[in-house]
Image 1 (cartoon, rainbow over the protein chains, first blue to last red):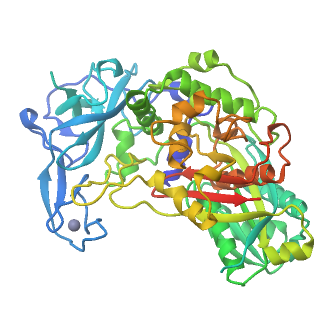
Image 2 (cartoon, rainbow over the protein chains, first blue to last red; image 1 turned 135 degrees about the horizontal axis):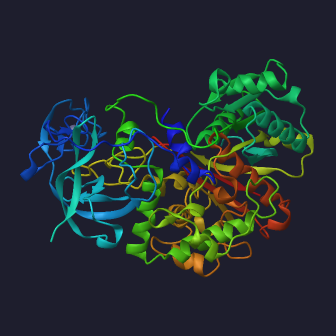
Image 3 (tube, each protein chain N blue to C red; image 1 turned 135 degrees about the vertical axis):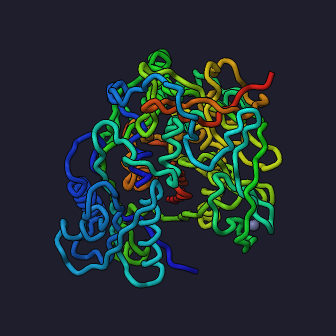
Length: 173
Length: 393
Ligand SMILES: [Zn+2]
């Protein structure tokens, strides 16, 4: 099933028309309800000190993100016990790109669509790379490979008056 | 010593957006391969079919579907789906059957019909599905292609012109390939003028999805010799290895790589061709030509390094020196590659093998690579699938 999605997303010449089509529009935020995480349990909702939440194998120390792991995937380890741990909230940009066209659902895009930038960020302690959008207003011209970034919370979209927030990477000044 | 297995015949249905049933493409390719091999369908003892998951039940049982369409004749069948590695895994199954002495001659077929336009991910809220999650977060296929392209720019000094030059080269290679979907030449300026999709990659640098079909007839060397075949191409090696933990590749559809906190980090893609070379007893220095997965123009540069044509970071030099053009030291994607074909997943790895077969026989016409003796393929897809095939003249 995944393959269908993937393959279909390698654009053909009809890419532009298929991506120019309308999807559900984003309504203005009412701001009445407390924001919800775009995915439950993947990150803390503490705006001042946001962390991604991973799992760490109790025996070998390998990290997993997302943290929903039942058996350790390190082939040298037979553990099935994990601690939920906050991952480093600072990292180094491994690479970056942007989205100039509106992605398909389940992405909820603003109308009109606003391009956004994305970074792949290397966490030193965990020795892994984690993807995420860059903070609003940051473009590919503002970042470079090797730049230090930190985690922030940001409203990803608003639906039926409800804000949904996600983690984003913000360049450190 | 296991028996030598050879390719006796190769056949393809032209790639395109024909919108017809995949069985038609598969049977067309199969009949072409049988004719090319000089083997009767009724002599085929084993059929390995490349499945296509989007074409209903017949797609899930492609080995049977193709056999029925060619006319049931009591041969053994198997069906294989392994994303981009589908064709190679089907080929490996046929080879193993022959090596084990369980059959002498087999048919391997892959074909696909792709929907027009864009297919959205499955509906509903599915936060446990990594593919759903990444789309929710706005991370699409071109995101992954472009992360690698941008990294080449920042780390190895690749330029937008280099990426465009790959497209221009492959378009030139595939221009006269009757099986290619796009037979159109481009200039660097035209490629650079196409809309930016995901910086730094542009529309003309990202591969399309296509319909297509490819097939090969494989046999034991003894069978081929008995048949008097003068056009045999030896299967030197096939690799269908999985990644090794901790996989350091930023990989669709995942949001994160493996953590190498307690393990060594490995590059999956760089490991794929190695086993095929070892089986074949050759190395990258022996390669006459290669067919690799240019899902994006920039990704072809990564493949130069993955299959060992140059050291890491030297791919741009290889390109700029003209080494990978037809006429150069080691032409890459003489067929035109995915740039000219688009991707028909279960057929694509076999299409690479078909191209190398034509090249090693010296039957590739306008795009013939001179004195081609050793060919290698490289491809990689979702969920730990990748493959490489080495063919020898
Ligand atoms: Zn462990």
